[in-house]
Length: 90
Image (cartoon, rainbow, N blue to C red; front, side, top):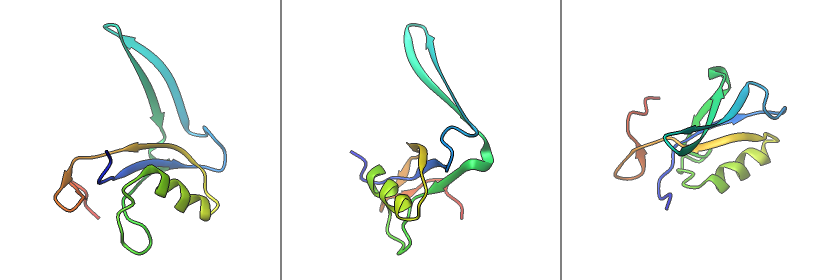
């Protein structure tokens, strides 16, 4: 399902610092709206060896090894062949 993955995530030692969440219903459709402080957001898609993460589990495991807690994680993208996020400029 997530063959390629660029991830927006918030890393935090204090859960929900700089993160707010609300439930919204619009035209009968339920949404979860999460607002983040921009300075708390990271875009990650490759591990330390340069391999794409390709799953949320791999990202969480990598950050846990660094003693970091992922407070929020989402798929952020549209991808080119080879799993390269479109519009990603590094």
